[in-house]
Length: 329
Image (tube, rainbow, N blue to C red; front, top):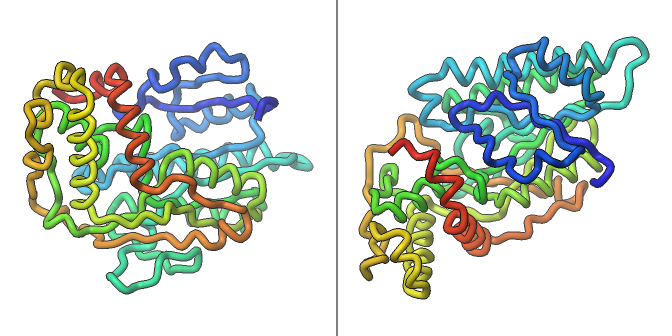
């Protein structure tokens, strides 16, 4: 998209990292605004000053564990923040005769609740049944976006995605947490017996899906974007351990860089697995049916889980300078 200009609007919370934008800020098509989406005046100034005609709304608190211990931040960012964006966009884009625009809301499959082992995957018409404060806050945001279209005519679309992974993933999430813990010789916490199942979506596949919605999606509609990669949590942790064991066996330099990792001394990273008390209200299984996106948008994920995980490991091994400063100790 060589003709497009991009404005990143970010409050830089604990999970925000300006280093993720390194190498981009010299591009004249790029602009960064440090501000909070709950600050409607700041949002309005940004829309006006940069003549924004498309919002892709990623901004959210997203870590389920944090939503259980501190739900207020999730209601503020995910519900009130979405309302603030919608109101600013409505005032700017629908004033007078209006002008072409799009508000795309990025949501989650967690709004649909949980699945049993034989239940069909979530579709766009699956009833909402959120079970965590995080999921409830995202469900509320989805409804606000829908209402803005049906009540005011705001041109909106929504996508509900499965669990993302890949480069730049904040290290409190399962895959980067386990990856960086292995490299430091720290325990790998696995909830319950590790049987909970998630569908995993490589970040670049997610971006391709959103691009498809923006270019070919029907205004007022929602699209599920998944990776066709259902894995139990324990199987993911074991695969990650095995892939890192193989990397250390084939590259002696890794043992020098990460001497505390079990494979640095010839042991398996699996020895770090530690089963912990299950999360309160832990959903058992998520699965996405992305058939509508495939039919209407031409969407198809390009990474299977093994290849996507290998690319993710490559990135974290190469970018210790990015993830190391984010760790609490």
